[in-house]
Length: 208
Image (cartoon, rainbow, N blue to C red; front, side, top):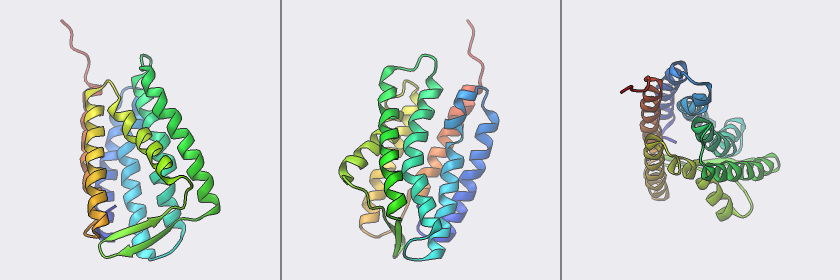
């Protein structure tokens, strides 16, 4: 999330542009989910620009934001990491993928009966997603989305996971202070890291 509708719109457009480039450059179909991650993050920012303009309360934009933020990313990221590591994916990557499925199922079911809400607080947006066993669901989400990256054998994947983990901590602290939402900055950095990963993957292996 960003600190205003304009910032979300600008960041979302730039990140989505990187997201268009990344899938076009992949050489292996199994790399597409990770390569498309910037496109998903950019779309998420653009959706949030609509949430800013819609104002407080529930709405279609808020529901779309919540669906991307939790159920979709909880499945997309760990399965993308798992697919990119195929056919020699380590067994440890299956745990975040399974956890992501379970987390997404719980949150998706809850969203159908309890629409999420959004409220503007200064330069931040406060989202209300009413899920049961919140600490457990949050732990599952973080393990699926960040744990899968941190457990990857690929060094660039682990770097991406570290950047996103640091971003989550920083943004959480700033959001609680109602200072400013800064997730868009980390989403932009993450998108550039994914672009670097794609460029690395498209390079032919070195021969002796």
